[in-house]
Length: 440
Ligand SMILES: Cc1cc2nc3c(=O)[nH]c(=O)nc-3n(C[C@H](O)[C@H](O)[C@H](O)COP(=O)(O)OP(=O)(O)OC[C@H]3O[C@@H](n4cnc5c(N)ncnc54)[C@H](O)[C@@H]3O)c2cc1C
Image 1 (spheres, helix red, strand yellow):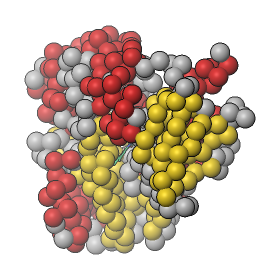
Image 2: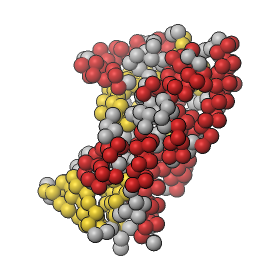
Image 3: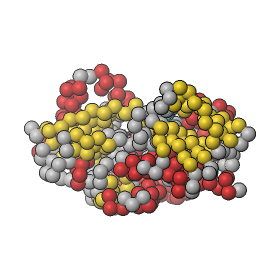
Image 4: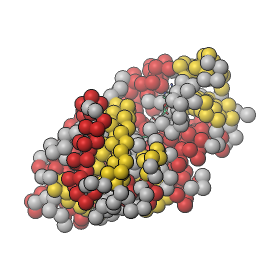
């Protein structure tokens, strides 16, 4: 039987491991942390089901939904609200995410000249993004030298940057439009283009199901990986024995961040030096507030402009994602803090953080005031890689220099727009490469 080790038990690693197991391989997943699922975290507290990191999915998540169905979880997929808010000058304007362009035109979010500019800009953007593929941004690497800000100014003019593009894109990428490659705009458009759906039981439901099919060794970080005459030597700190151990296997798929993959596997650092140096990751503080009353309107989320809310990119309304997120008749909100605000928020007393979050949420949903029931603060040390212009050229360098026939392969969301969809997609691709090599 062919043997494989997969590094990391996030969605990319568990998808790759599941695919190899399906193909008859003996697979072990090594996980550094003491829990599985990586950046997908579901917590249960006082009857609320909290997605503490990743929060949303859409029908554009083709690989994710296909896998969910394949492992027998179709009945867990539910429709979410498709109403979204964007704040301008303190006021929230609501649009139907299923018909965004028509819907934006119907709001007072923009003046008439801005609306005309918006429609023409959207058409231009559509043209630019034609060749974008969510799972494979290599297709749009030719756009990688430009920032989102640069492209958006060309398409929409200066007026709509602060009021529309930045609020929407800071939710998608966690980054600043001036410092983010335009490839993430094109892949972001695809990612946001489907119907908003979610998973009953929380977003850990899929990775937990995948993990049932494979052996996962927790608290067992890999430290060194090398190709030895066509086999792979994987050294790790074995939690069971408490000592370092080296296993020789037929293949190894590494799904930790690329700088960490390159640190444990020097071959990767030589093959993709630029990607190994891209170490900027967005951290976040995520505050959850549960209330004993429902909201009067039911949007899925509200995007907040940086000029008015420098610390917070968005409010999510989790009870509008899936019915189990809050007890019946209650509401559950998630407020994200952006990377620039994390140090300040971490220095604040927890009650001050809650006070700050309440003020923002209760400003837009005054009906919940006085009914606070549950609070939770979660620190996410790395949300996603920040992808400056040039990020996907660095990814391309990896593809150019690393043989698809190598017994060491990589997968992970950094190869595309960071999301659960691309984690699953890259896990699939890494497993497919390995399986094809073995059959050669
Ligand atoms: C705050 C936040 C909000 C988000 N919102 C959304 C959202 O709404 N929608 C969406 O689709 N996505 C969202 N994401 C992104 C999404 O969670 C990630 O893109 C996806 O989960 C990444 O999966 P992955 O398997 O590539 O990486 P990870 O989940 O990070 O998995 C990598 C795993 O490798 C392990 N590891 C690292 N080094 C080693 C080592 N040396 N040995 C063994 N194991 C190791 C890590 O511990 C980790 O478990 C969000 C993320 C965060 C943090």
